[in-house]
Amino acid sequence: MSQIDSSIELQQTALAQPAEPTSLSVVMAERSPPQQAALGALAGGQTLSSAAEAAGVNRVTLWRWLKTDPAFAHAYRQWKLELRESSEAQLLRVGERAVAAVARATEAGDAKIALAVLREMGLLRGPLRRPRRSAHRIRQCNEM
Image (tube, rainbow, N blue to C red; front, side, top):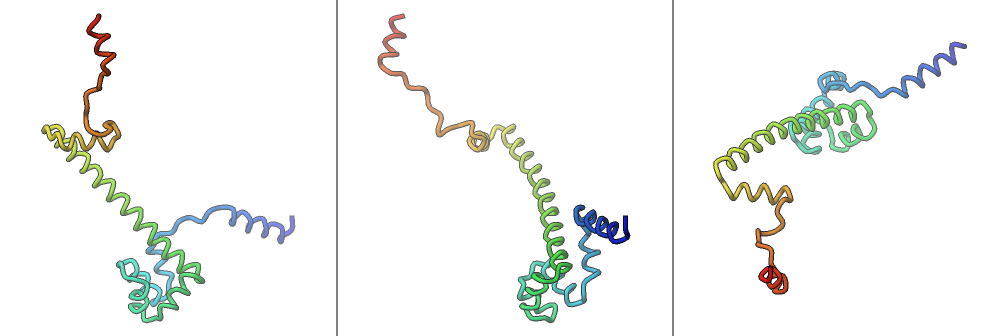
């Protein structure tokens, strides 16, 4: 195998394997100071216009970085991914506490909460009603 063939094979192997996710701090360190400032502002919840202003650049520049600079776009996506994962973890913890609160309320006899849970679980369809018997069915039962 020639050196060119092995180089092509190595490139194809690298392209076939997904890139390892990189932590945001590593990605941020590789950005220019204005890009770091923009990413920091975005991570702080600022709008694109405010983040561009904080970085000392025009908002068009920030958009261009997001659209044409793969490393900057990757850093932005990485921040959003980390934020999403953190938010999901927080919601799971809140969910645990919510379930525990509902359990305590139903154990304490809170019928309103119990009915709401049953309704949301689809175990109740509308208000509770006694089954209606037709006049014919009532006569049959009486004749027995």
